[in-house]
Length: 315
Length: 315
Image (tube, rainbow over all chains, first blue to last red; front, side, top):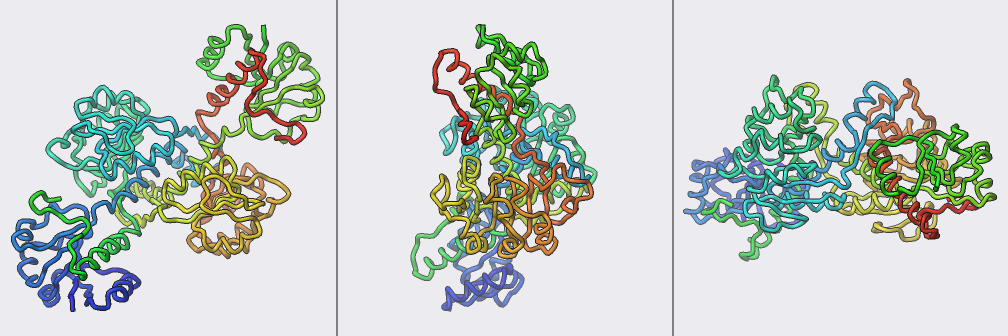
């Protein structure tokens, strides 16, 4: 019998689904500290953070590590490679919730939802909404990969012109135009919306500076849904306190959690999404869906797995 | 020279645009009480409410009435018809802002924006967003006309299954399925979202009752963006106080403005949009765009006008 250890727990209905679809598999829901189960497990399903060199040393039967997360930065990839353990993840799982969050924030601003909610708290009927539209805007998307392209697809449905920006300037899906990082200065003045979903790399750290915000339109909306180190926070604070642009919607920060005395909390035009843009009630069901397809392939002794990680490259 | 009277004022830049594009036309921006201009005007651009039988009697030169609104219920259509005055409106102008408002509210609920805003007011970092997704939902759209179909198109882009509901059950654009009014009871239990953009007619007044809300899912979202008389308000209050469904987003009411002691203001799950879902900074520019195209046709002595109203039918 194949032993599978989940190092986290899931809802009863998902456990039942796994057990009924795979009667030949023994599923245990525990933690990576459960030495007995760790030793027996041929397959481990984990969020990743609990898998250290020490965990690996104890997981003597381990042949496949399924990581229910997109980031693998802290995992002992060298050891996994040396032992020839198959490693797969749930790449792409953030696409739907993150692009819905981006659209939610943009539409909320354009259609005056913060104002509507605040009027209701005061039981005050007023029609001075000052609403505008997303339709007809131009959006610059920094990092038009899986998530960025999905945002582009949705923006285009709303009649928004999309311009993608990456290192090469090579065409990406759902982009009406493309630029490379060197063309940022000339393009920023034309954008109504600037969205970053860039990862943290040598090239993206500090990519945006105060001067970029000066170049943007006064009524521009900036959204950082990638990594907090895209910009030195002090420079963004300066830009927002001078109202160089109208809105900054931030899901990521230099340091998380944001301290309760951080200036962002009270700043006009700053909206703080506490790194929840990828959260979704559908996350675990979707991760298990990917896992089950891979598990079927595993039991069939096939090799066509989804999202196999190259331990040399790290993705 | 052709005399055009606007019975409302517009921004300087729009006035300049009209005058530079139509140098052969004399534009006056005043009110319908300006008897001198009223007598001279061959064309009147109006929001409609100021045009009475008396206004018409004074507008001796009037040949074309352009109404910058969608509703014509209160206009003296019989007199307009008798004098063979051309009447046009801005049908379809609400499509973009209204569908964006509907999407904004839905995405805001699914992606926890009210919670995000409230956490920020308390300078409180928490990641317990409880967010879900629009993707994979089923939406029932009561009244899949120009606005309802546009909502359907956007919902489909988000992976939502759309079911249209009208009197006939005949196919409408961007609907995955169609039902007629008689099939409501059997369809309501399958919908995650129920949106009405129905007008007020003999058939739609009181169409929804308390029992329909009992039939809906406990986590359903109801949106009334049509007319307030779709449901007797007391019945909706009963349904919401019993939490028969999770959310009611209301843009229209039995009586507007809503009194400050109305129970809706403080009710869990009720979101009050004070009849602003069609508001947009683009409204007047878009109305003038339609007017200019018709004006060009008028000056060319053509007959191919946009949105001509049949005074017999009233639309």
